[in-house]
Length: 273
Image 1 (cartoon, rainbow, N blue to C red):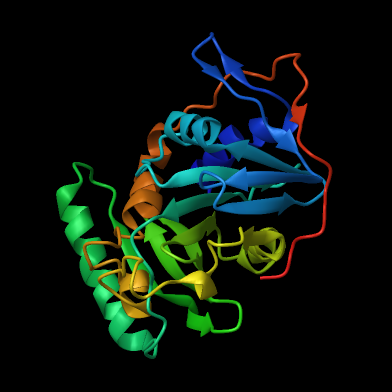
Image 2 (cartoon, rainbow, N blue to C red):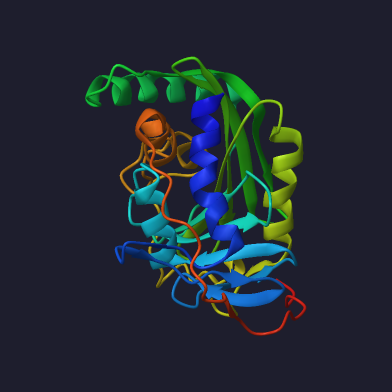
């Protein structure tokens, strides 16, 4: 598991303080408790205590420096201090996602495996990513407008779990991506729950604010959200799992600088959806 430890080491430097690398990489984390806007103000997060948040540009810099691919949807990154786990937050403005229809685990798993095989053939690397099965089958909470699932996968000889939760809004959705190990996943998934507890769309941007005669509608529903096969849904495994193939070439960025992380607004209770 040495490769996975190197992956996490890069992000762990963020949790301690601002990071710089020969003037190339310079980031300013925000420590919780704090309230931060994301997705151009469409939503806000309540960052828990002892947790670090990176805004969009800083999150992308760290992910790229760590050898992970990005797709432009990233709006932030969250990590507890002293923990390996971290959550990449993204926003896709692809239209209102209809939430009717059931999520059938077996057909969805087959579709994901097929999509990953295509990704494996497209990547110029000997390290293949194989999806073994569900670590948590897809489920949808209609009251919270939240869909979540997790797959068990292998990147070469390393066993991994990739979890994804999507929070539906008026004309798009926030996504929360977690990459963990099978042993740590039960504990790490609590981090996603902590972040989601303080995440709300702004008034006018909530799922119930949708205007059928005015707002665009996504070309797929919940099933396509999981598989990513429709035009308005990017392959959900391409950015996260393809980035795992770069584990062998990860670089740990330079040590912490002496600058202190900036503080955001004081923690405030999240408004009702």
